[in-house]
Length: 316
Image (cartoon, rainbow, N blue to C red; front, side):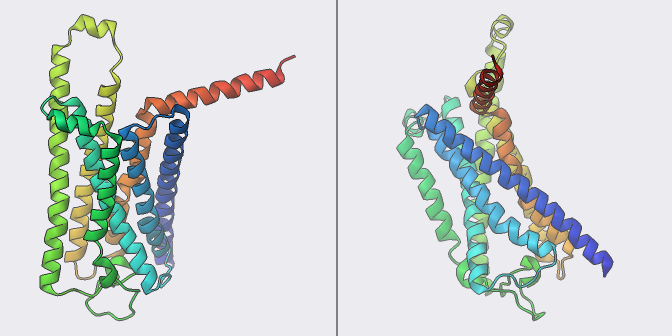
């Protein structure tokens, strides 16, 4: 019994650390982007995509991470039917928005970098209204795709029949009819695979463009201009982000499939699956924080103003 309490405490602290770091990173990034936006007075199309991605990450961490942390600490039945429906539906929608927004960000950068895209598409991607419309469509489509969750998820059940209570730990879901389950599985798998294939295609296109550009640039030109262009830095950031997303998403899918196939999945497997599924929302904001030059410039300006203010106060 003491060993089980110790294991639950370790998992709970692990989830608490991950969720705390993720919420802190995403909240800081969201505040920084909006402060920079107010200072520059210019709304770029990429800012809309990045703000939506950060918002979706925060919702994923709140709707998936906090209940999972409470469950890892051993708390049970802390959500009723309405709470389970709301929390799990919010998680599914936010997860879908995160996937589609990452896909949109990858396509947006590819349209700017790759010459193979049509001029009409390139012109559209530079329009703030068009990007805002795409972001709005992401929310609507994800909500429509996951509306079935409201009718299929309920509060925790004490019975030990074949249900999904052991998978969600704090909610339950009776096994649906085979036809309904098959249709839903095909729709979810098809949309996810299409987004992943599109991201891999745009990533490969951007890598090829960068390699060709590097081959064409002369060594002397590199010596004269050693710093990478803003477009190249942004492309490398998105390549890192999308590669991270594909890797963690694939591992999370494998673990989730393993959980479903096992009759009585262990707490270790359940916690590991949840931990990996929260990896991208936790680590992605730090990729932007350490790579976006606007953020580093903003920190430098704040540090300079603070130093000047201190020098004035301490001066004669």
